Length: 442
Ligand code: PLP
Image (cartoon, rainbow, N blue to C red; front, side, top):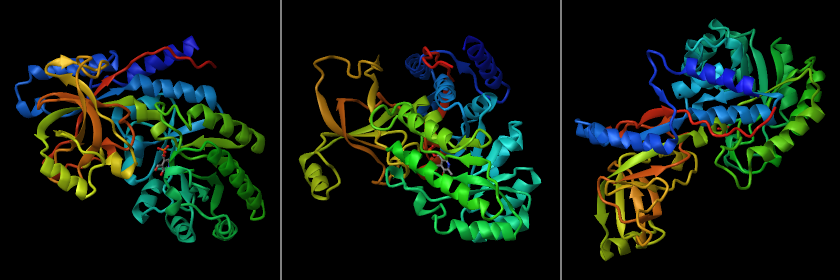
């Protein structure tokens, strides 16, 4: 274990500091936040000093890697980079030997640019545009998913040597983001697709599925594997001898400790795979949020505050816009059109905590004095749109313009889909590598 840990640390070091990449500190997240806030005080550019920022903990990504290796040793993770294509996270995972799930030409290009071999990429988008398929062909990226007949004709035309993975539909009713609405071949269509692939002389190597992102029932993984087994058996009738299973994404982030946990998923998925698939079958997964969800903390400044009069409160309550009647509205420098797009697209609940209040650092204490009165407030992003609401009922002490709040677990589906709507820039990222005790054994 020690040898592996020190090898990985060395690789992390090698992967991180380079000419084109930022420095990586080795401080606890709380100290990183504090150090950044301290440096903002001396920042001469006001706009710079008011920008929201992330602290990314690469140590957390590394711990998640170790946890995966310990609990699902047979399954090779291919990081779903759409979740957070941060260059440092990507380099770290590449150096740890992960593969990558790419959804587009640009994603494939950025993985290849890191020097990753094309065999470590799966182009896991069942509906691809022609030029992207050609690009995959020209760059020797062979593994790709499909779930419909038209896609097979397209692949026959532009990438006849592809190693195809048939994505099947699974029950995603126990997940927050139901990807089955858009993708996945129902089981009554797989025979037809396999027959067509056989006729077109395409190489179908196996099956993939996705139980849905933000899955909250570990049993969904076991049931999906059983479905995949059925299609493995069916494929023999069409001349295919499958040796590849892709169990998709949907694995919970480390901060999820109630309901579904990674331990629960691994406890069902690992044994089910082992009982239904012999050692000659290669098994991969496409985890996204699992690696990064808990690794990013966002610090935001209160840029404005409105004390709400009763009239405004009543109007808002009458319009059904607020669950409770807050006494203050705080406006912060990142919002729904930026990092907090996860509220809309990823069904996240984002809870602000006090970071700096009246010049006093409050990372762990939350509120500076025990007798501080906590009130219910609403927290808004900086744009002119009223949909830009981050929390309608945040419990906070009274805060002033210039104070800071922070939000934990902001690593998944946040900055990757952030826009610059209304001219606001994306929040900057600062890196650290914490080294908490690793409890997983090999
Ligand atoms: N694989 C595919 C094809 C996806 O579309 C997604 C997310 O949308 C993922 C993997 C990653 O899912 P998660 O972040 O839930 O692990």
